[in-house]
Length: 337
Image (cartoon, rainbow, N blue to C red; front, top):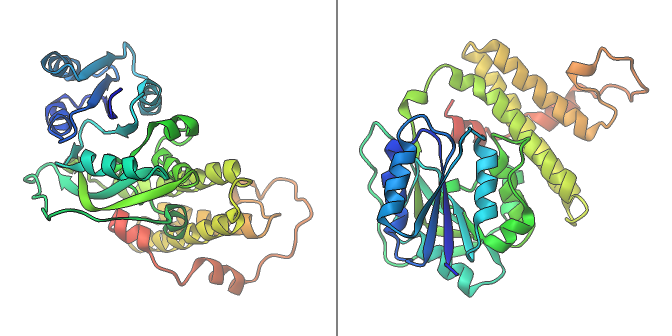
């Protein structure tokens, strides 16, 4: 049985496949398999993937006759995996030398560790490939990933670095169809509820950012991003509430953090002239706090429905205390408003 399986989903990323797969084949861990899943690409992805498979027996290819979307493709890769460890690596991302060896060493020696992750360097593909800092050896620590994600409402695990135990991955199941844009964060929450998480103090991967994707619609995605992250938390806590001793406190923490970010990011959008998007974020933040802390609250979209018995409306100090006066970590770190 191979030590690690790497699944490379690909849709119209043929121009990146050689470098992506090459970054895996060049690892110091030789006992590996790579599965490229081409999701009915219209470019030369399948031809490139077939050539890679012909050149190295560790590489195989599955070609979809029709596009299935990334969630079904990810889950197909999970079903295929049988090695001790598993990595889902996008066709436009890269591993750095030694990444697999570090993860395998940690999990081989520490059976309680179910997921490892490390630092990831962003790379705008119109710029030269960034230099990878080198240092002798590496360190790692177990950390409370579940608490940290709830405290920051951020995806703290760069996907190109997330190497997990295949047996745990299969027990947890696949990615949720209902979470096309936040399924990775919800997956890390499930891993964190299932065992120890190891954070490696070393660069493990390179995340490619496409320069052409930057546009004014970037700000509009903040609204959908907020909604998707909230849905990820709801999905996780709805399923794991009875399995966590502190689920209520963690869910309240996540709700407060999300509301603070939504409120402050929304105000930031309004100040920049994106009034409609900003108002949606502020409204969503207020609704989420009231929905969680005042059970009878009906969100804005349903307030015109026939009313049920409701408690008195919360006072302004209660709202401001719940949603204001906190850091804008997610806005500043992820969206660079």
